[in-house]
Image (cartoon, rainbow, N blue to C red; front, side, top):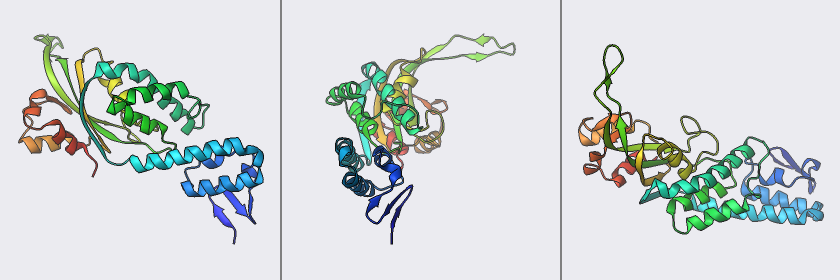
Amino acid sequence: MPLEIPHYEWREGRVHPSILNDAGLVAYNDDLTIEERRRLLQKLFEERPDLEGSIAGYMEMLAMMEDAARHMGRVRRIYPVPLGELAPMQKITSKIQDEKRNFIAGKASKWPNRLRDEFAKLEEWAADSPYAALDLEYLRDISHRNRSFGYVVTYDTFIAPERDASGRPVGIPELCSAVKLGDGGQETGYGGGKASGSIISRVVRSYWNDPNMYGGVLRGVVVPGDDRNISKKIAKRVGGRGLQIRGDVWDIRLLDHLAADDLLTLLEVV
């Protein structure tokens, strides 16, 4: 009986001609297991020894993919860091993430092999930053899967006053300190979509680049994470919404009742 694998056929010990000129069609096929890809690449090498160089490169990437799969499990990082320290990294993480998204969409892309300078810089940052390390792990992952995460951020912001019947402000904006719970890396929704799992890109774009947010600090991250119904969960824990400012934004005094670690527990996908 022939061994049938999605999109490819392996008949009488020969590789189907459709992949003879492109080992990447095998290496990047998420319908195959890593072991199936490895076996097909080995067969392809037997058929086309002239492709040894590219096949060896894909074999190495499959090994990296296996290593990433072993390590990309549940993660919790309680490590307060000012967003100003992450901001310089965002240009690099977003460039890699955009290239990865283009690749997944079948568009022209430099990901994963032609971003050596960008990955080298991220490796340098990862030596000192746990968030850069988490992004490096995700952005190198050869599979197309996303990585959801939940986060806790604190910052100062001006709250707009109420309006009167004519729409004019009643009072002046008030500066307050807030704690915000959110998520990223979802397949759909705000901040979601394919290849949206970069923690640094998500929090810097949302809480550093916003002109009405000051002194932002990323307090911690949990993987996987989801912020659905998070304010309802918080209100249940603290006995009401007296500290809620709006949506999933709460007065920073919430941290007197629930520490960052407790809030990450509420964000964690079990």
